[in-house]
Amino acid sequence: MTAPERIPLLVAQLPDTDALLPYLRQIDTNRWYTNFGPLVTQLEQRFAATFAPALSAPKAITATSGTAGLELVLGALELPQGSNVLLPALTFVATATAVIRAGYRPLIADVDTSTWLLTPETAREYAAHYPVAAVMPVATFGNPQDVEAWDAFTADTGIPVVIDAAGAFGNQRVGQRSHVVFSLHATKALAAGEGGLVVTYDQELAARVRRLSNFGIDLERGSQVFVAGENGKLSEYHAAVAHAALDQWPVVVERRRAVQARYQHLLREHCPDLRLQRRAENGIYPILVGRLPRGLRARDLQPELLSRGIETRQWYCPTLDRHPAFAAFAAGPLPVAHELAERLIGLPFFIDISEAQMQRVGSAMGELTRGVHA
Ligand SMILES: *Cc1c(COP(=O)(O)O)cnc(C)c1O
Image (cartoon, rainbow, N blue to C red; front, side, top):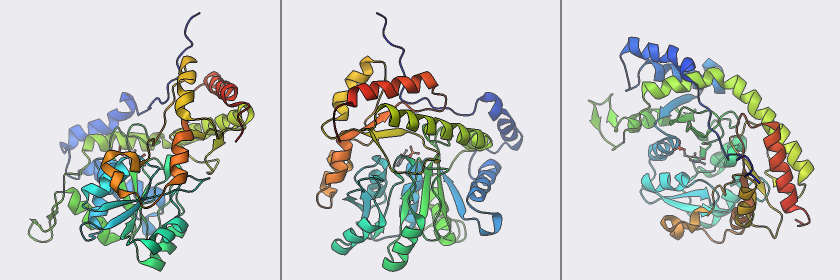
């Protein structure tokens, strides 16, 4: 018997050479390669316009990566060193590394059972018991955060909110008060290889983010450095890829939505005991994660699936508090996040996954979860 054809977990899709050429030719003509060149400037305007029409558009500032974007906004908040920043246990490690590198302390919170998000309600509870200087909720697996609720949280408590929406471009809106950070990493829905984007309505914060991304050089005050920054500038080459990705965005959106809808239908049909994240059906998601019925652990199923040629991943497992670098930062017990981390399984999901591949994943999951009850 031959081994079954392998279904990869993820296949990135970036603009091809032909799509890049018009932008690369502009770079040839401009001979401007980084330091806020014309492609970066236009890209920021294009991004800002995707959130609102020109007159009411927020500021969009590019960065070298989503992680750099997070560090820059956190730095621009200018909180006292060592301040607590509340964040969810169930997230990518960069959410926590950004806090530490900005000079603050992560305060690791639990997440909601059905949306798998850190919610404003939970943040209010933590803020009542701990000194919380800022909150960094995550748009987990592309599921957007409720910006109106977070704006209300900031209005009530005075605590600033930075949404780590790294994988949620296309889904996550920007609040009047809440700042949002996206990633343009190759694996995200809108990809430029590497890159990040900070979006905010706070003009002064935007100016501080920009300055910090340029080593902290204050161009309005004799090019002196008053607060040390970093090199967080996006190059013109990465901007070229991001432009081409934006050109293709409408097609990508349609395709991702179609895959998402079909997959969701197949999974519900084949394995009704697999719980999906509570999130909008018409969202644009970079990955697909299911929660196994109680009694099944992702790590026990993975070899079975792999023997059927199906690659899977335990995204965000272990939770932040179980990484040695962050072990000291848990704010009390984290039962929901710990339980989810054991039972969440990332399934193959990419833009050109075929009907046959989705069917194979659905029936294998059905076979392996049937009879085990949630
Ligand atoms: C991908 C991701 C990041 C990191 O973004 P980079 O652009 O790779 O630095 C941060 N947070 C979350 C939740 C992510 O999914």
